[in-house]
Image (cartoon, rainbow, N blue to C red; front, side):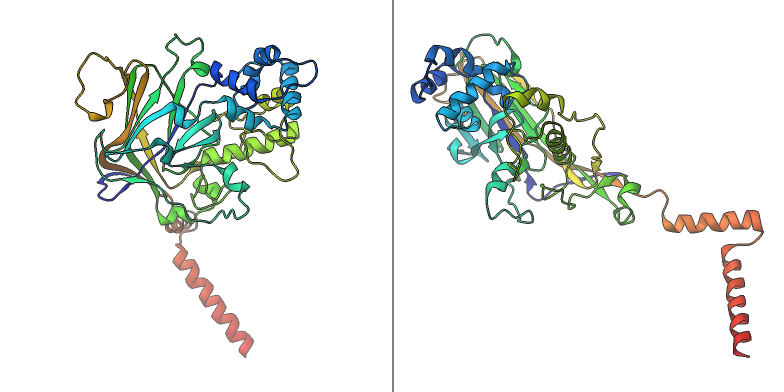
Length: 401
């Protein structure tokens, strides 16, 4: 059953993820080379020639040579530095790529809205999201702890989130996956960013509008209390092994973690650190990539979610022409040839609700059995019940005498 309703209360804002280029900027490489110590027989020229492969530890798009990755690991160990720390040093920070932000009609510093997190895309700036890896590092981590999501109540491109993204490199991209910045929107807000998918590249001197609307999937009570195999979906409030709530992508990630630990005997850099499990090294990268779980492969028992709200968004982009006048004060002081603008906003307050109902309930089963008995035995279930009652009374009377 499908119905349309108007959302008159606050609407949950989606998680917004902005990822810088995976390709390491040259100025970051030079800063890194100036801060590290070099083992005997290793110089800055050699490190500069291989350090770009560091991204292979956290991005599947980076090509690599195992021998070079082992050399990088030895250099990091010589400096008492792990891969995640080195990757953060070589990645543009949120303050560097997000130069201006506006939230619900007010200018706000981007650093108060976004936080750098490790995701399946690598290091990304996250708004209204969360990281399981960060939470599990906290000794007081509690899966049942309530979370506070950000919401909006007004419609329009000026009432959501507006971000100006710096685009320092104006050269044509060699590889879209490595040289473009990416943006990804995830449903329901406060989404765990370890399992991202379907990002949108952010071209230079362009503006992306991502208006979203809400679609709800609800289930009736007669479906809620069916077994999991019969209803073929799982409730949101059913926790997983590590995640405090159920979502199909969370289930796929836990399945992927189990496959990598079983096949490679390690845990991937993007995944939470587990007690007694080592982090995957250079020689494990090929094994890790062959153990990745595709979203629709069917290798994991991860049914769909029964009850949840989904934000539907179809981003559109157009080129910014710096010579044309602008009517929005947000553009003031920005070099429109070296930035990109992203607008994420509530498109309308209409909410389409899809309701799951059972086509065959216990009452229907009882009625069907009555018809079957009437057809094949010439009597109904009520008649059989009357006969059973008479037999019970006769037996009870005989025993009493």
